Length: 141
Image 1 (cartoon, rainbow, N blue to C red):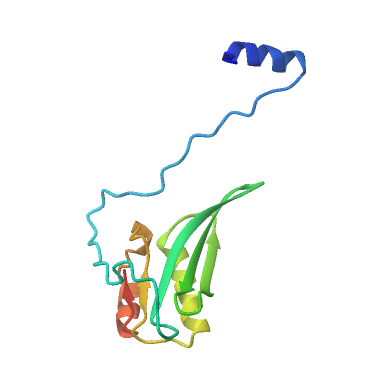
Image 2: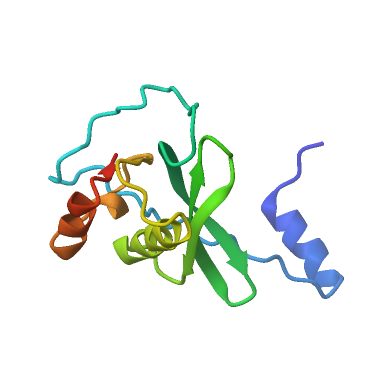
């Protein structure tokens, strides 16, 4: 049964109710950046024969009563366990760095681990972060 917006509004008003307006979705991905894109070394092979060979990461949004929080998580593909995570009110490269630092600390600084993500702009490390990753021979995709 089709019903128009004015009919719904009138019915809500008679009952002393108000509709909650939908918030506009905020785009957080910028695909039009000039930063280099890493090669896809995993090529959809999401298995590992030992711990600390391949970690995969992503960022998700969590709705709270006070607004959105962003959660960055890194998972070891061998054990499927979370090896590092970080949460923040802002989605920045620091959020991902914090999750990576936790993973490296918890896993005793493994060398040569491949860190795979959806290649979002938050994983474009520059300056000291890039140097730090190169010293540990970590490949960030």
